[in-house]
Image 1 (tube, chains in turn brown, blue):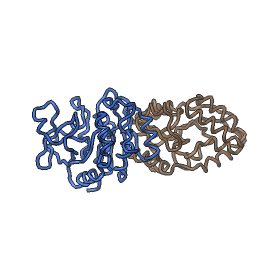
Image 2 (cartoon, rainbow over the protein chains, first blue to last red; image 1 turned 135 degrees about the vertical axis):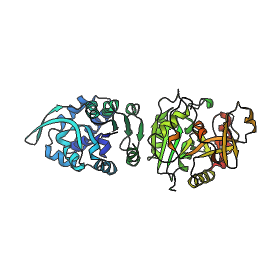
Image 3 (spheres, rainbow over the protein chains, first blue to last red; image 1 turned 90 degrees about the vertical axis):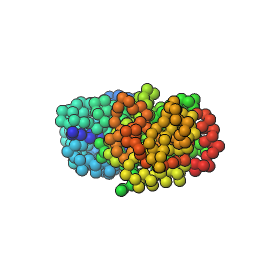
Image 4 (cartoon, rainbow over the protein chains, first blue to last red; image 1 turned 30 degrees about the horizontal axis):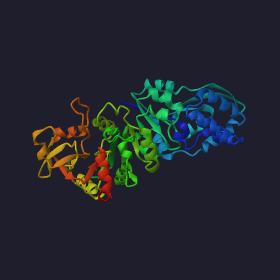
Length: 199
Length: 223
C-alpha cells in the first residue's frame, strides 16, 4: 500500500510565514503579517488575498525573494523526514513556484504550487492560484493513501481530499475549522514526525 | 524487553453524570487538572496521545501549552459512540505495546509506577484493578494474580468481587483492538485472552459529584 505525505509549506515546513518576511524588505512586514493572518484564519478567501499580497510584493526582485526564502528557518525534523522519504513526500503550497522552487530543491522534494511569470527578474503576473484539492486528486492516481499536514484554512481543500489529516500547531494554533477536518492534531515537530513514521 | 513507550489517554467523554459543563479530564483537583496529573505520570513516555471529543478545543488549548509533545486524536462521534471507539481511534497505527488510561481517573503516582514496572516485566497484557468502590464498576474475579473474568453489576456473583476494572491497562498485542459489533467497552477486548496478569493500582474514578467531592478531600493520597 503506497502512501504519499503532503505538506503545506508556510508554518509547517518553515518556522515562519514566508510572505511577511519578503514584505519586510519593503517595510510592509506588519501589514503583510495581518493580511496573511486573516487569510490563514479564513476571514479572507485565499485566492483573492494571495493576488493582493503578490501585487504588493512585485516590487521585490525575484532573485532577492529567493535569497530571503532560502534563509527561512525550517523545522529540521520535518525537513529531514521529507529528505529520507523524498519519493513519497510532496510540498503542496499556495505560494508561487518562482519564489519557492529553491526551498523545494534544497530539501529535494517535488511540489505543487501557484504559478507566476517572471520577466527580467520581476514578477509580472500570477497565472494560476493553486487549488490544493486538485493537487491531492492528482496524487490519488499514483498513491493508495494520502496523508496531509496543514495549519490554515488554505489547507481545507487538501484535507477534504486526503485520507489521513494532521493539523499542525507549532507556529500558530491550527485554525478551528481545519481541526474539524482533522484526524490528528500535533503541536510540535517531534510529535508530528513520530506520528508520520507510524503511518 | 524494551520498556513500553506509548500511552493513550481516553478523554473524549461528556461525563454527563457530573452535570458540569466541562470535560472530566479538565476537572480541577487541588489546583491541578486531572489531565495534567495524568500527563505528569507519563513524562518518561516517548509518545503520548490524548483522545479528545467533548469540548476538544478547550482540552487541546490547555494541554498543548503545557505538553507540546502530546498528539491529539479526534473522536468527533464521541456523543454517539462508546469508550471502545476512543480506544480504537487512539491506538490506530500503533504497533508497539501501549498503556491505556481512562481520562477520568485520579491515580496514585507510586502505585502507577509499580504497575508500569510490572507491565515491563511480564510478557502478556496486564489489567489494572483497584479495590471495588465505584457505583457502576465492572467487577473482576481474580485468582493468584490473574484476572479470570469480568463481572458486571447485574451478574449474580458481582457482590463477591473485591476488585474492579480501573480503566488502566497495558495492551501488548494491538491486534486485540479490532472493530467487533459485540465490543462496546474497553475491558471487553481482553475477554478472549483471559486469564491475564493483573496488578492493583490505587486510583479513583470521578464519575459523580460524590466522587469529585471525595477526591478533593482525599487529594493527598494521590500526590
